[in-house]
Length: 426
Image (cartoon, rainbow, N blue to C red; front, side, top):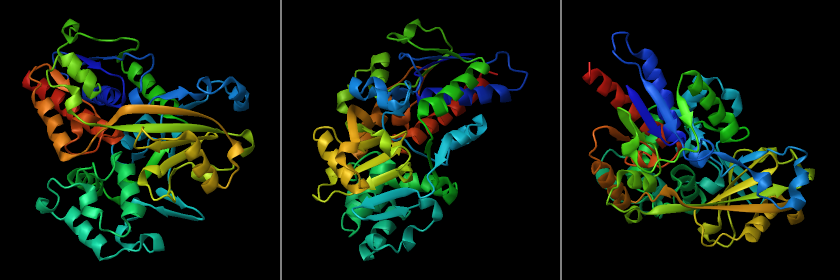
């Protein structure tokens, strides 16, 4: 059986990885082995998670401060994973040393105060820090979220569940941004609930958070590519597909963004019917004097802004002397403004934050409103071709937010479908 995977991002390569495991487990009485190829339009695999050479983006006057490391890379924004599904693949690949455990979980920085929240410690209801002093509204909201009676969550957003909480701005809002890649007013309470339910089923240790020590390309995609090639998976980059009818395979897996998937399917449901969330990342190069002095912020830290505008809050991470920030908007992200916020909270001189590079992704993730998710399900149901399977973080949005974990979950579904198809053909 020949299988072609279009798209070499997290979903496509996870599918290839899981299918190689399936191929090894097939009994000898199968008349055909699995022949797998991955076609990627870019020159490198990794999709939206692949790293780029930041030096090439900065001005010439700052390039020499990289101390001769001409190929130092950074991710387009800080991507994290839970110890749920993807980390299992990391363990199987033997690359756990490439990943950094965020022992403090989520970190929060508010002027002179620094505090943390680690969901893996199972202390959601016992937080004693004055910033997270729970009130009656918090317990009511948590009951509505976690109760098996879906009526409390149906067609509700996270904001509608938690907005009356006195720690909404301090806790629920930034936590929703970190987990859902979306603002609470956009996020389906059902999906937020499913995320916790999914992880809790695997034990609270699955809430442990990890990120690459360097970047996703070097620490994950390159070792994964090498493994797949050793398993006889053919990976072709710089290969753009515009007509899937030209591909001669038993099955085609479309592991592409929603817009590209619709084009390949010649689907008359327009991509602009579905709402997306923009994400802006700003990468600030630090002066070499600060090398290794801010290592405590290697994880994922949230900064509160004093102007009471939640859009001006930000998550950031520091790696290889680069500050990478992530913002859930793109219209009003002022590079110099956030530079001053970072300098103030990190207690460094603004002059020590040198150059910057702003990256805007207008279609980074799906809007997680229930109305939007219903549109996605309509698109998925409209795919009638028997030999075409859909994969990708957006295709799992009925159960999980559009994240790295969701890409892997969609790949697991692909593995199960291919297994069923193999046995049906017996």
